[in-house]
Length: 130
Image 1 (cartoon, rainbow, N blue to C red):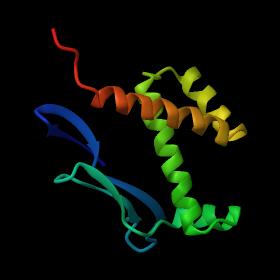
Image 2 (cartoon, one colour):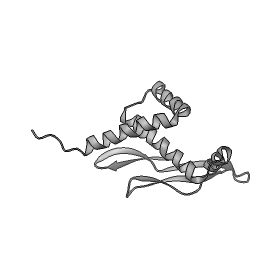
Image 3 (cartoon, one colour):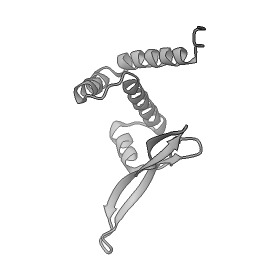
Image 4 (tube, one colour):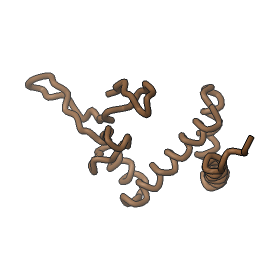
């Protein structure tokens, strides 16, 4: 569910919730859902609610524990931040990044982390005096 909000005086969109559709209630024809991530307006953060049937299924198929799954989600968050930093919005660019990540995740993550760290340092550096 996406909403339009004011953040720092700017209008922007935020995903209020990320919801899994689990099934349809045969009696009422209503969707049975599970909220996986919830946006917190006060901190402008999206937080994991602690339960995802989809993530549980992925962990089971890949033989991962919850810590490994959370690491993978953090890595993918870094990829998204990096693509935003690099202003990647063309599907071919995004596709190439995803293919690179699936083939050599460690190699791409090394570059991603270095670029994000450099961008953070540049943003924190004082502006030159005029």
